[in-house]
Length: 171
Image (cartoon, rainbow, N blue to C red; front, side, top):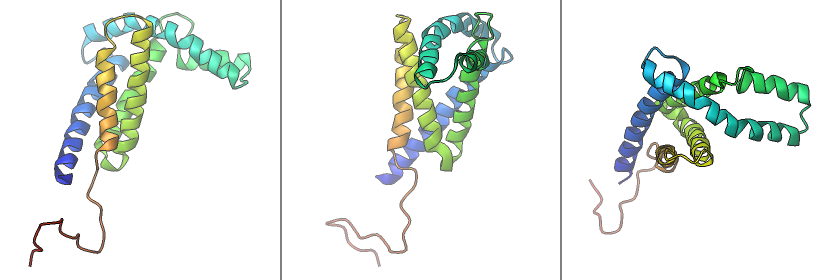
């Protein structure tokens, strides 16, 4: 049964990696699919309006001075143009990095965690925007969390495993 769970986990790793490599690349550049990039660029200001107050309030609660808050806002969210393309590209870079971590079995748990957190944020964003697109990131979040739950490899020990009740020991 563990072998089946490992195969399901590996399959999910590859599928989610492919999804997020495409998704992240479309956020970073228009070289893959220009129409999708244009659509995402038009949506990014809506995302920014959800996250900018949360970001700035979080920094204020952490006692970060206003000059640093302004600088971090310019670097991570918006360059002052209101387009929030920087925010979109940063999300794309995070998705790409997490997708590549998924492909490295030793780091796949960390990649899955990053994607689950990103998709939880995307679900929140779509709920706040009151649009009907919150289901897809919610499902992707659940699949990312499933990767964290499923076993990555059989436990290794020096002792042979004991047969389950009712099984005969192989000679």
